[in-house]
Length: 358
Image (cartoon, rainbow, N blue to C red; front, top):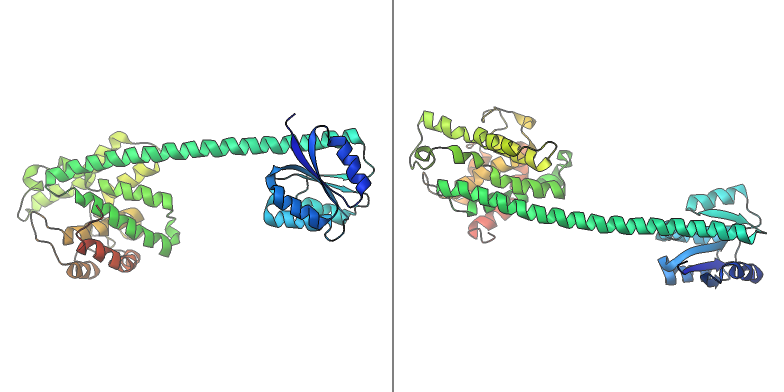
């Protein structure tokens, strides 16, 4: 049997020696004569202790005092304790079990019974530690695999998005700007409006999904996509269909119950919807529009305003913000506008520094 350390805490020396005699051939033994000494040894050895025999009645600090300390410091969940007593009351027994003792043994005790109960408890806790260690290792492996997959997905997403931008003659920085501004805005939405249920993980997924917001432009003819002047009514109607075309492309990769796919789909389809119902393609209104699509919507508008395009010059940052707040680019959620105001300094800095973060 693997060697373990057992701590025997009892103020009566003969009781300590009796227990030591039972276990000393198979276990390393530590002894403590009072509660204070017991706590000192627990602090010194910690989880190296495989079992503690703890007398209920001891000087300086009682067995219950030691249990209270172990409970407060978290030791009781990782170090099993067998309470030993000759005069336990129902109240003290209940209290001991509430603190988390594994067993209670009454004096005088039968050596073979004590040995078997102690071995069972040690093996139980050791098995639990082994399982927890394996689970932690497996969790780490899964986390690393997921991070690797996310990096691969991000590369593919950026590559696919770059195809769209290459066709539309926009710089590849547009993808990075949209992702950057999306992450900033989501941070404030997460902090200010917890009812949306955003988490650090969902923020990362939404940020990557934002790169595919204009995926459907792949299906728009060059004569419309690259036209330097104002689009005709029919051309604009065709351009608006990029929201639907993008979703049709994504449906080829549809995965049930895949959170990331849903973010991509919603952002592709709904990033031109407006809070008052005057957007497209579905004329959704208010909170019918998923919050992640609302965020990418205002980010996309901001970036379009402050960037030079084939059909317009870039607006100054202050003017772009004014236009958004005055509903000149459609109506946005008051909550999103509040967060946009909070993020304004970070948006300004990135814009004025010519997007040096990309």
